[in-house]
Image (cartoon, rainbow, N blue to C red):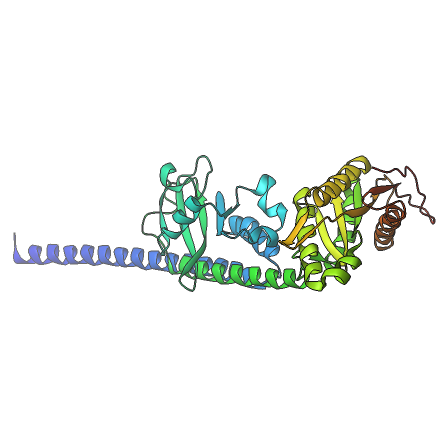
Length: 391
């Protein structure tokens, strides 16, 4: 081969190599550009969900965002949230609709020792990888999940919960794939959840009677029209009880207000044991209590009232070895059950309560330690009374 031919061949080879290098460089550049665009879109999605979380005005709104918007925004197949609830306080702060029913696969409140131990032994860093039934079922019990991302929620060195993302794609969350985006999101989630729960605690404390630890009148007066509005949509019966401790003034006069306070606390506890989780018990003033019974007909409400009377007077109240008291309670019952549309919910709530209060007055007049039934509340200018009978 002549030197000229060799030179030409070398030149062609160099050109080919240069072209190959250019092609590879362009491919690398395009990959970097695509990654940059993907990260930019991912950043926008994370910024959107972070803004939504930080703008949430209640724990209900916050959890709904995590349950509904997060899944859609990141095209996930499932997500779950587990929160530490060793003292069972979160059950009073988080709406029942988010804790039970069809949504219970999303939110779990952990209070059993074995659950809390698992939570405490979770890695404090985000973990990703293949879904393993034995390892991950307690975090996300959903069929067909192939890969999972586990985001611990940590505040002041303590794990307050864990948020999990699941995918049917085995390669969606690869091992050791945790990103700065997820790390930042887990921190923001933890802060927002803690702040929202603290706000709910503050709201609850303002609507809780400090002495008896049941709801106060303000809470009851706000909840009553809400429940009547729900009744207007569902047409289920709503009942109201008005309760009053018999001869309470003589307890205070004889033994002092300290003993009276103990009596109020113990009576509230006994009444609470009879009620369901959805029922509302409130100290309405002095020795008076009001009870709201959603989805409860008149006959059933009378049975609840009788169970309350039995719970209060069945066993004597022991203050100390020198003060052992027999306490009784009287009750008035009223019920709303109608197919008619409610025009003035606030006024109707006042009628429902005042009707129960009048029945309570009749119970006092007839000898106390009994329940009087005002029957069904009529939606007319004048509240009609019916079915008064004594248990």
